[in-house]
Length: 385
Image 1 (tube, rainbow, N blue to C red):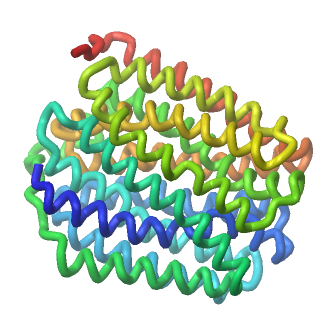
Image 2 (cartoon, rainbow, N blue to C red; image 1 turned 180 degrees about the horizontal axis):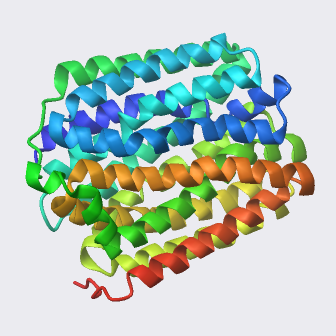
């Protein structure tokens, strides 16, 4: 592993994802202030994910052919412009359009960065380095909401959007100056049949099912947890940002749990971690104040910290066979299917049955995803030390 390149990659990702995470606690509340219904709020979040879902297969495969850096830079340009687009948006439809544009930019950045890391990761250390990467990535996404909540309470929501654009721009400049192009570890012959190969891999099918389900559950958290905390518990935007940011120190666990995925059964880590997440998502509607909700959210994040590096390590291994960019794009696309379908489905359910039902539905979908993961990976030999 080239540690200097790794540090540069994760530093630029931290900066850009910090900017991206700033709006997490704000968009549902901002959309509500613009008169959006729960279903429209679902479409606003889904617009980002659906654009990602459509773009990802092309971006991953093209980056396998053309190189990673050009896609990383182009994605950050779009994310910077989209950040300013939130200031322009004055109604729910315009917010949906901005989110779609933002999703296209993200499809050129997030999975390509993971593919870049996969290219430079030594064999047998997939869990370790993906764990470090996930820890830093989720930390930036956790700090962002707190930063955004405080900025909005102290100044205005437009100030927060400007800060988001500035951070994405800094990430772009750092990528251009400091990040070298990387040699890709897939031949053109392999790339030509990459998606046919992906569909033949039971490991990737299991990881795909897992990622769809986790995407669905995360869509519930990011879309309806801020609304639940604001409407049912009366929390301020700063407290909601603090709630979501509480996952930051817990995300750092992935640096440790990633090394476990190289020593012990990745399958067990995925299943056990997800089981904990299911329990605490289902319990969230019972929280009557900030502290119980914080505890449930933190315990859910701990479960995810055990599951995610192990699942990603599976994908890195398969990526060496079928194409790293395409494999990471498929993994990211699975998450965006969950993120795209989840808010729309849950928005309709919430309009008819109440906000609590979103959490119960998310827990049920995650359970089904884990059952599918267990089925597809049932013939894999356990990995032990």
